[in-house]
Length: 121
Image (tube, rainbow, N blue to C red; front, side, top):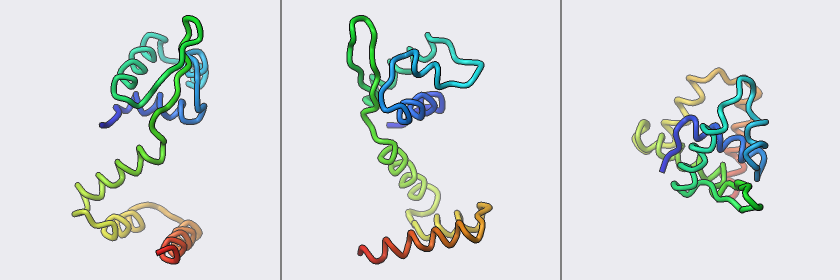
């Protein structure tokens, strides 16, 4: 299941905070801050989708992410590779390295990451 852009924004703050009350989430947003009702609606939808859980403290809810950031994005990157790059990670890597404005240092760091992964295989 996928999150909308606004839901991803809420999750991004929640991943950073690790757990948060409504006021904590609102404080994490830059001005102009979204309405409390907007965040509450998004949290309800995300709870229904299984992305967010909460613990009750009196009448207040402390929200926690139920999905790890790395798991969420890994699934979507894999979907992107499957749908747009013929299920070929090498086609994706080729596109990524050619079409993004990576510096020589960033490309060298990518090479190191790939070399470490090759050593683990």
